[in-house]
Image (cartoon, rainbow, N blue to C red; front, side, top):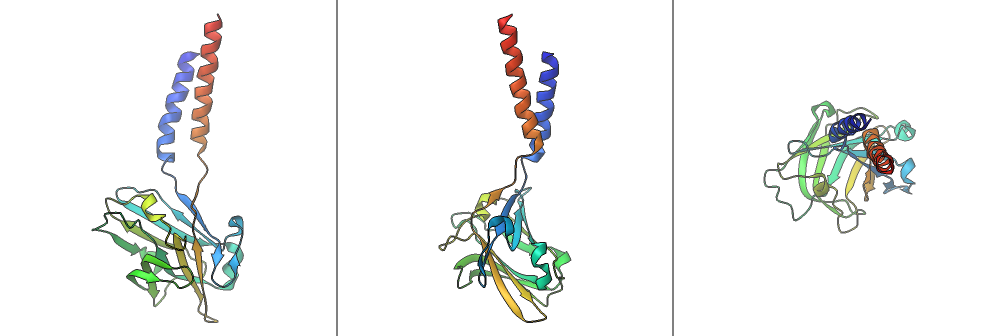
Length: 205
């Protein structure tokens, strides 16, 4: 029985390692036009992956409830740790986005303050409701370096526009929310608890 529990524990630990690299989910719940929504009803969400080989991926997706507005993403404002050493930093938009994009440092948004970097799209080729995907590349970069609040308390912002009616908006987020721990970790906790119970019963005998 003890061998069975130890095997279960080992398997849980091994399966948990890749799951520990899960992303942060950051609700973009504040709009420069419409104010703030509850996080569960956010206008859009950004998924920030853990750093793998010096690459952090940010994927912004719109809330399906608001896709009927006809919005496309054309800007992403990022705020990196000012104390970080990112001499070789590169920020690129995923080729699937289409269009031309330019990188601007020390960008101002007005209502949400300044950000260290802005990727701005010109000649947009992305479709309504399409995700905005960008990658930050530097060997020293960690996720915590990206989720860094500026002087106004904002860590991430995206620009959206409706090309048909020429309306634009800016969505921002501050506090990142970690994704729930995977089931592998729950199994790990169960395995540890089972070993503890087994040992107690053995000691009583």
